[in-house]
Structures are given as C-alpha cells and as structure tokens.
Image (cartoon, rainbow, N blue to C red; front, side, top):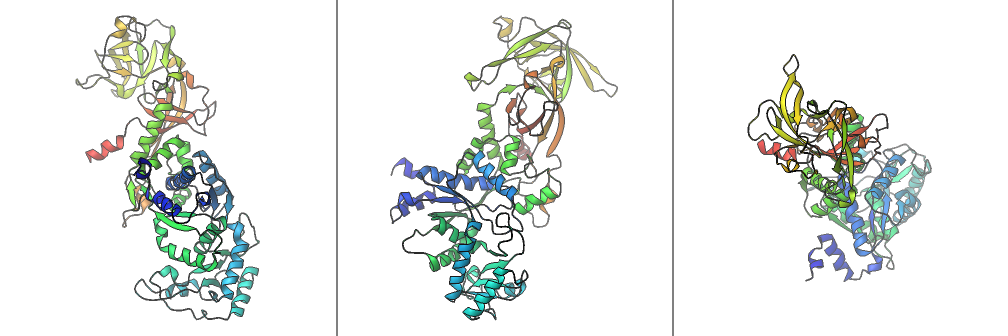
Length: 561
C-alpha cells in the first residue's frame, strides 16, 4: 500500500471506494452548507477545511450553500460574514447556492408526494404531534388526519402556500412509519407556516421547508456526490435516503450522506444560541469579539488562516467526538506567527530606569533585527536615551540566584543595546519602587565587535526609550471561560464559568517604529507575546490585541492544580 493511501482519513477511504463502485472522478462534488443564523465558529472551520480540502485533493468543485429556510433567525449580515470567513480561510467556492433557490422545486416535489399518498396535511398543534411521537421503545400514534384524501390535502396545502392560515394551524408531514425504531421516520414535518419576510424571497412564501426535507433534495439538485455532516445527523441519514428514494432519477447521480465527529474545543462554547447569549448579555462586545471562538473573532484577535488550517489538519477527521484542548489551537498560531511576525519592543507595566552615566539629552539609534526566522525581513533602527522603561517585574531589589533579570548590584543586557548595572532605586511613600538608577558600559553595545560587547550576562531585557515612546491601548485577552468544559456541568449555567479576567486594558509604551501600523498588522512584542492591530485603532489612538503569549501559561497553571 502506498504512503498516500495510508494517509487517507476515513472519509477519503469512502470516496476512494466509491470511485471503484461506479462513481466517476469528474462527478465528485462537495458542499459546505451553513445556516445564516449566526457567525461561523472554529467548529465550522474544520468542516470548511474538510470539504474544500477534498475539493482540492480531487480537483472537484465545492458549493457554498446557505440553508436559509428559517426567516425568523436568518439575516443577510450572516450571509456576508460567512462568505467573508470562507474567503479569508483561503478557499473559493464553485457555486454560491441558497436553499431558497429551490423553494418552487421543493414545493412541486411535495405536491408529487401528496398525489402519491406519501404526504399529508396535519391540523394538530405541535404539542399534540409531539405527544403522539412515542418513545424509542414504544411506537407512535397515527394522526387523526393521516388518511385525508389527496384532494383535501391538495386544497389545504395550497391554502397554506397562499397564506390562508395562521402559523401553527397546519403542517405538511411525510407519511412513512409511526412504528419505526428511528423516531425521525415517524411522519416527520416537511413544511410549516411562517408569516415572516425572508432575506431573499421577502414575502413570496409563507410556508418554509424543514431541514430534513430540504437538505438531501438540495444536494440532489446540485448533484453533490458526498454530503458530509457531523455525527448528530447520523440518525437523519435514513430519512435523507427515504426522501431521495421518492425522487431520484436513474440517470442522475445520487448523493451520499456520511458523518464525521464534531471536535469540541476546551474553555469555550460553540452553540450559536449560547454565543448569541454572550453577545446579547454584553459579556462580549459582538460576534467578532476577540474572545469569541468565531472565525471573525479569531481573525480580529490576530489568528492567521494558515494557523487555523494547520489546526484543522492536526486534529483530523474522526468517528468519535472528543474535546480538543485550546492549547493546540494556540500552538498553531504561535508557531505560524513566530515565522512571520516582526519583532518589536513594547513595555506594558513600566518602571523608569535612569542611566546616570549616559549624557543628558543624548540619543542614538541602534540596529535591531526584524525577525531572526526570516533573513529577508531586514532590520530597523531603535532609539536609545538616558531614560528608558523596563517591565516592573524585571526588577527586584533583592533576588535569589535564579532571578536573571535586573537587581541591585546586578547586570543585564538591554536587547540590541548595552549592559547596565542597577546601582540604586527610588521608592514612593508606599514603598513601591518608582525609579531605578543604573550605569551602563559604553563599550558593551551589541554588535559593536568589542571585547566588552561579547561579555556574557545571564539576563536580556526589552525596553523602550521614554522620550521616543509612543502610547497605545493594549488589550490583554485571555480565555473566555475558566472551566475546560463550561457546558459539562448540569448543575450550573455555562455563564457562571465566564472568566472575569478574560480582558484587561493597559497603556503600552511602544518603540516609535509602530507609529504607522495598519489594522491587522501582526507583531511579536519581544518577551511578551504576539499582538495585532485592532480595527478600533486609529493614528491618534493605537489599539493592539494580544493574540497569544509566547508560552502556554495555562498548561503550567493546570499542572499546579
């Protein structure tokens, strides 16, 4: 067996087997069918990568089809966001389709089923219908309207279409088997009445098809060869096939539904209903809040398409559901940004350092490498002066041997600059250090080639020159939920696990090379993490988001616990 065959996932094995059993390679067609009732999230990203990845592997077209059959929840805003997300991930669909494109054809086929005695109008309430469904071990009860004549069903269904009835007054049901062991086969609803305008058809229709009736038939119309769904749709496959059995022509390709496991992500929720609750309750600022697991939120936070695609490739396709640690997603964005992000210096919790033997009013511009991972990235100039900022945590009056940062009597190297030695410090009335007085070795400048410049000290600190520093709002994002599985506790609402420290805003002091950044630009703030320019940013008020830290600090915290 070749290496290529060994590397196939189980979906690809199914396709390869189908190609030996009558399917032709030029008949392969896939689809990604989101409902436009919210923004796409990281779970959808895996499905996007699967379907479009298959398209690339087999050189087959992939449709983007909007399952827009519920006007009460769907909006054009969501359609536009979904298209933007798919394109941003790096994929291009063959045909943009809408289930609403097929409303007339679906209606005509429903008429056909009524005429063949395979569908009927039920005038019971939804509660009555539900009470008659039975249980997995007990058969359901037939509706008293199940044996209406074809003529009466035709008249009522046409009246439903024409808007003659109120919502909930009638539904159209398929006539299958009320004793089936699969409860989805117990005369499922095909159409319901909704007097609400549709984002594309406006008020042309006041009956709307249900998902199970729409999905397989849409696949058939588009000649999709493999309809790939998440595992919760496995029980729906029998119904998918039953509807196709009634309509499939022998001279057309028959779609095949197959299922793969949903991959849940730790420390988050991906239910659109719960994500909407987070938005509407004000826990987050919107669907694209950088703490959200939506693709738009990840994009705004600084995630790259490559990192998300690599994450999807790593977790792969499986037959069993499991929870993927969000640290794996963070690893992939960290790994990609390490290769492409320019290095800059920024201080987020400043402590003033005065270099007492550096001439007052003097300045110099030091050479700084932009990205050691990319030789073509070049270098830049960083200003140096008598007064600089370092991070508060990088100084202690007294410290043990394992503290390799600045301490009284100790030396450190300033990144791209000189070796300095802490001589004394000044405190406020509460005993907090507010200034450190240092001396520097003027012969120790990095890259100068002197013997002193090659002298080894254990600590290297980032810094910014105070007279040259520019300020920015820096948003420090953390995980939205403190629990790995906020949905898993049946006794508590998931909202109780919202992390109160998921967002902190601080003023950062940045090197002046960042003055002219653009929205979306990504950087590594040396020793702090990866950051990008937020859409709220302007030339007068720069705003940066922390995408991810340099290390997985959560893993260390969990190990301690």
